[in-house]
Length: 457
Image (cartoon, rainbow, N blue to C red; front, side):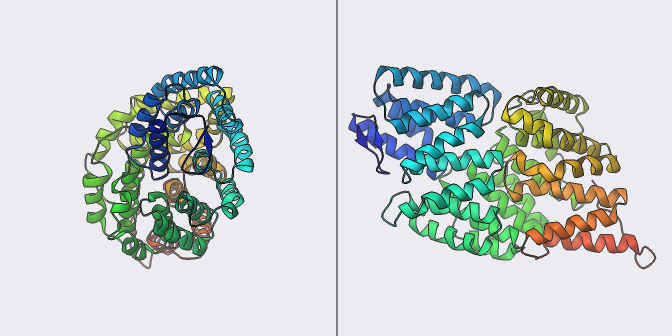
């Protein structure tokens, strides 16, 4: 056994492999584009490293793509063979056990194994981040916060993972509504780990949730190096900046960021698709003509209707298909959702049943201009939307669509109540979207005082 950078025993004897493994872990924590390169070097130097194969499989699972399930399965089998070929630690076995139940369709059960590891090894920053990532996919904000706070007393400023832990704490605090503490933790995270894009982005979330778009732009300005090294997560940070411009009514700046940064590489990674579709949806709800930008997204998403890995991904694929009115592809995706939901065996199939189906039917109805049907179904999905995964900021596109459908269908009292609930989550501060919808509802209630028009789709 060797000891890695986070003071954990690992079944590596080759110093070259250990060095590459340490780089892999640090890159993963920083959302670094170099992560797969370092992992490949680790496994090249130590092909029988079970934990390396285990983490490789988990990385592929987190990508949420049907065609990569086989690659993840192959890495899982390699990990099992390696664990049989040589003795591995209890910690490494627990992480492998977490992968096994995850591969069976139950990431929720993987969390119990991660928790066992962190009970015995609270300074294991890698497992902390894996636990954090799975809870993010499952929409378990309270669990994220609980696990970070559980291990936090075991860290000090000298621990190489402390900055990244604070970045995770900042995000968990923000998602559970403790915005002041989240801002403090995120700023400290970046001081200790200048490449901690997750911590930087957690502070951006704080600005979003406190209706402080100008402060958010000031926060991001000059800190581009904190996310320049990232994998496609860098597009997500640019997306946050675009949302800030959007809230300030600076539509040209938002559109420019869409073209030059957010869709600079036209990938079909679901996270990139979610950035793009949710931004275009927000722009159109504000009455902005987005040109032919839906077309390239719909071309990609029409090829992913059978994916079924994550309901969060499916709903954003559907946004693109609705945006470009791809009737056949919409039908295929919703039929597949019905099929998966009827089984409801795995964690994701259950999420496809609730809130997935109602949300999908609502989105389709929105695209068809049937705002009453859209409002009824989106409202049905609304109490459970956190189970789709993602963050408050990401899920807000569905909240906006629900409210706008309510306004267009004439459910003004209901839409007003939703606006109030949305503002309450934002420390009681009304952002640009809420203020505009309040004005619109007032105009619709007193049409003789003023002439208005609901923003065009």
